[in-house]
Image (cartoon, rainbow, N blue to C red; front, top):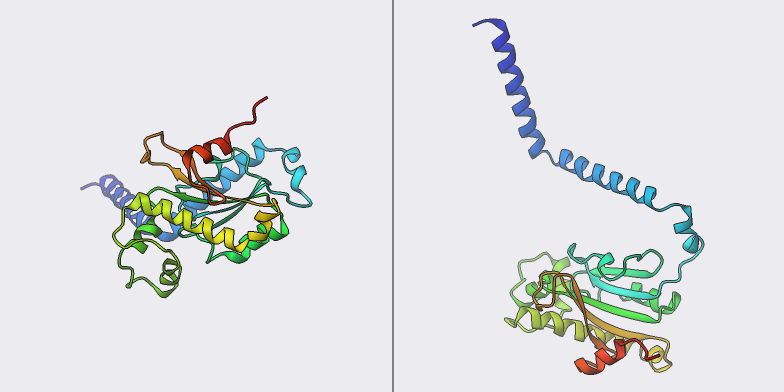
Length: 227
């Protein structure tokens, strides 16, 4: 065999091995992810000049304190196309008050947002886990699932809604003074990325306003004022 075929074969084997190792290399995967992050940030900067940041350079005045799930399928732009400076976001598994009450206090008491929204979502993994046996989970996860009051073996979507209602109830008890004075409205909502409620992928359903869950009354609250 001549030298050229051997060199060519060696090059092919080296490339194949390199690609295989790269696919299994967590560092390589992390590099790829971070490169995407940096590129996305560069695109964001290009699209948003200095004027975009001026309103909140020195301080923040958000309109909503939002408690939502850490689930990556719940994006902020689904509820606000320009969330910068408008939404004070707090995320945990199961969109619950108990595991992040200090952050919620900051939004309500220090930033004085007029709205506190609890945003759950369909197919919530935390709710599903709390409905079953999670005794083999690490202690840190068990502690957070323990605070979710859902029915064992219940219907998944109904328990998602029930959890939102439970969190609204907890928030209303915690901030009863602000609600009574008209300084705060507590809202419960469900984000449906999967069209489980059959009104379209990505729809936001407001299901609770200060404890009111009657659909007609919630709809009336959300309706724009008549001219």
